[in-house]
Picture 1 (cartoon, rainbow over the protein chains, first blue to last red):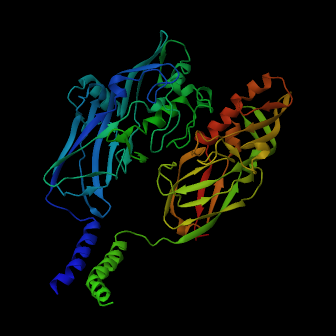
Picture 2 (cartoon, chains in turn brown, blue):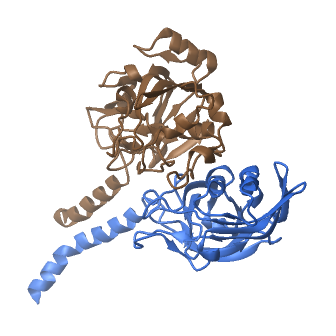
Picture 3 (cartoon, helix red, strand yellow):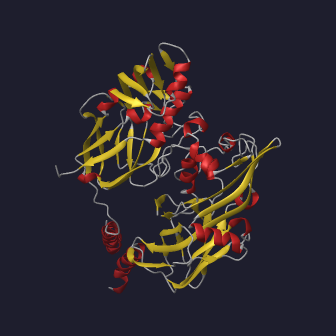
Length: 291
Length: 250
């Protein structure tokens, strides 16, 4: 009798297990902030997938963000979640290649956590300055409530155009998924999983507002074309005076899908600033909300 | 025969277990989807027939576009990748008269119950994975996404204009517009979807002074012109169509 029931019990066990219960002892989650290579390394001109196709070389000297409010939950049990309200202000040009720890969570159930999110958010006095980030830059971020401050230049054939843009484009990024596989991450029983919210540095050079995979070209001419006073420096005020249709030809650009209406070049920069949050390198966080 | 019966009896618990497992497995998620359909209606802004654009009085005699196919997606960021299967869709493109004063039905959306959060769509020119090149749909006015005909007047200056505008999918397998957020609505609750088009906002983006300097009558705005680019950017990014779901409440 006992042996005849065994297949039934095994099937039941497998089925209930598939419904998403814990699968062993707890584990640890380490959350790293990672900078895409385009931030410390810039972008090179060329015809490759990651190159700037209109011949401009891009270099950043500062790339500060306010990043934090990491959260994780499970679809199978919406009451089960863990999170941190820690917000780091970090200059991503100075993040070690191994990443920067935002938070560590211990005794986390060893199972898949498929609802992952974090914020790019305006800095405030509760924000924490990351190691390697200059105090003056941190203060600028806090005093202006910026979520983003980028300083750099584009260069082509000896023509240099600089920019220094700081603003608040606070955004919640959710439903993050790695480039391949299921959404979120799995915690190993008794082990540690490294989770990496990844900030990208090339989105305002895209020719579209990507949704999911980054199928796009990279172009920088629009910045040069926005230098209204031809002084070799483009300000946010100048970007605000440039009609989007004057610098983004429809034959090259598709500006649909932005979280904000795009009327000016500044709008385009802000719209792309709302898309910088990615996951585990080239993975995406397709649910974006303006904060 | 006896051997068969013996084997069959020995497999019976496993079969029962499998059936029970399948039944319980079905309870893991929400699989009770229902088929739905609701009409798609379109409306322009009748005030577009005559309006002021930075000192120019614009009068439209004709304003038509082709809208569709339309795909309504469960994800917030709709793309071919994130919305491989639409929650609801209208597969045929339809002609819309932007000067019509009332809503007109232009298609029926077919789909399944569940929340719709975004839309992706074309303007009468499609480039699906099975089409080698962008393909003009029969409803496209004059073979283009949009066609405007009208007159521009400022004081003694006056010229007629004809505009042909194309919104092309950026690549094969893409829609012309992707990731347009809509108010989260369960398809089961949708009694109709009304799409609104604001031609006034689009045409206000044109540099009418520059057109006047062309000293043509009529001025012909071709799809590759700066004026057409201004319209495309307006439709895609600064004044995109509005989406309004109608429910049970009047």
